[in-house]
Length: 276
Image (cartoon, rainbow, N blue to C red; front, top):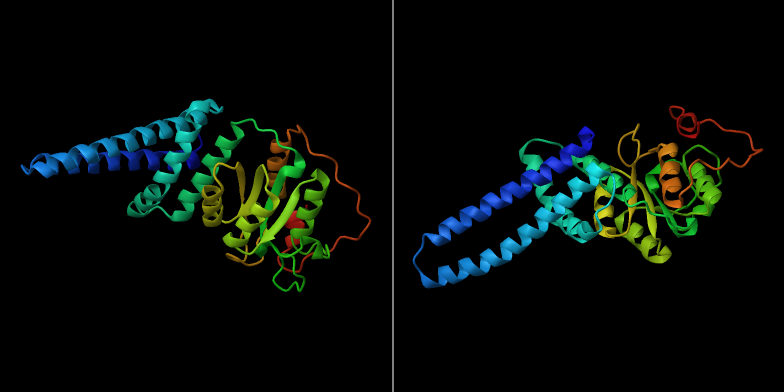
């Protein structure tokens, strides 16, 4: 299991142990008081917490088994989702106490999610795949509004949007460019996809995966040579591999020949870096 995946798995296991310790402390404090209502409260709290902890423990076990065996465990899928939703914020908080950056933990979570999605061996029609990209991939100086209609892109190839349009058209997937989480959720409601290939930073990818759960999402981290939220890029090969996985194709389809001359970006060779 790669280190990045081990980080998130280790944090949620540690978080589970921490919660168990706190529960034990509460039991000890309540059990050592003689008031009758405390005994009743102890039983009620004990039953509720025991149920939650059992669900979370089986869910965490499901995550570990899925990553280890590289295949999904159907009876544990629901418990796995519950465990992630409950333990993710605890893992983030524990990471802060251990001075581990949130981006590192979120990146690890994205890796865990991607492997768990791939373990399901899903097959999705290409027109039911939503390629969701952030607005920061567009060149800052570009005057064309693509968040309303991505076809407003003039395909100058000074940013990666034109390459993503070509990728979506080649495989028949839907492409949407969002300015934030609210618009991303709106596109999900509008297109009603059965699978999503999402491009974003660690924070937005993590929150998006949690928000759309149980919809399968393969996340691809963006590249930020100019800092966050400005003229970002993405590894197009990773995006294409995610689409290929959902469709079930073993190899990429050939690119359509384009007779238009290639243009080179003046910003650190962005077109060369991202369009090959």
